[in-house]
Length: 388
Image 1 (spheres, helix red, strand yellow):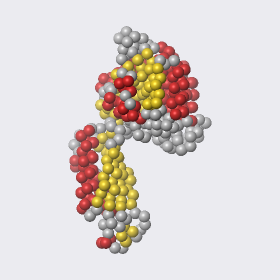
Image 2 (cartoon, rainbow, N blue to C red; image 1 turned 90 degrees about the vertical axis):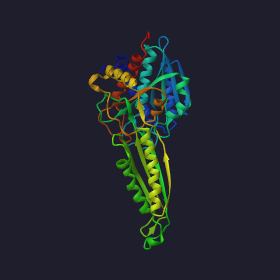
Image 3 (cartoon, rainbow, N blue to C red; image 1 turned 180 degrees about the vertical axis):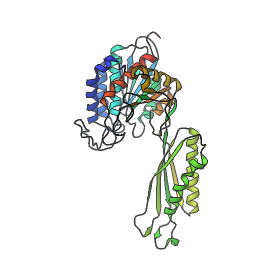
């Protein structure tokens, strides 16, 4: 690998940063300790401007290059998850019920490593906007920061981010033009019947039967309504009803997720879900309330952004370690809001064999942090070379 030599020298302190961050995971937008640590490091590195308070604890920092030019945005998420850690590490979470189970401590560390290098060398034109974002896991800190105007305030022309990927080759990069990750929506169905004695079902209106029928009918959306060339996942993940064996309940509740890449498919799924719920409930004499919550939109890379990012990744990791036409995945990511406003790309970076994301035994691989930091640095120098 062609890891930037100066960044390779940061490896021990980057591991210290990351392991410290791992001890203090914070949730949602309340990343106060994390943001304070990040801001202190950025001041230590000598960045030119630090603005805080976006989405409560988000930070945007500016590093000026040599000469005029555009601004490129680099993003890292900072928040953890409400999980009890089970790693047994010396630097395990000190915040009970919270842990960095998705590697955001590593993402923050990689961007800090790139920031230190870029502030030292400034071998680029224009500016770099370092975006440290809270609340990726909960309600969409990226959307909040975009709505607060960071793209226009800092004149960001394009934007890039990385997510670690367990069980992919350590230090490899994986991306694709177009959709890389799916939109993530949630549906809630409450079926209202009339309860009664289980021995006398004729005197009741049974929501349990309606719930079973609705659940089965939902599966026909993909098999009978969807263009076979397009992709859609609808998963019923919860059914709650009843309290004992001899009582027909008054209500039943169904919950699930919808994953799509295409706006028309997203609309189709919502419409057909609503129609199926209403029709099936009525056929059993029940009423039903249907709610469809649109979550993060699909993460869609620009073609030019992938070309640029792949070139920088190959410079760091080598040709064999970069795949720039991978299949999209059905997970979701709120970086999508940034890519809706500006062109750019999102990439997965392998971290080798490890527990999966959101697992209580997960731990970020410190060995790949200099690789990610080198990618960010090379990306800036490739996108905005001095003299252009």
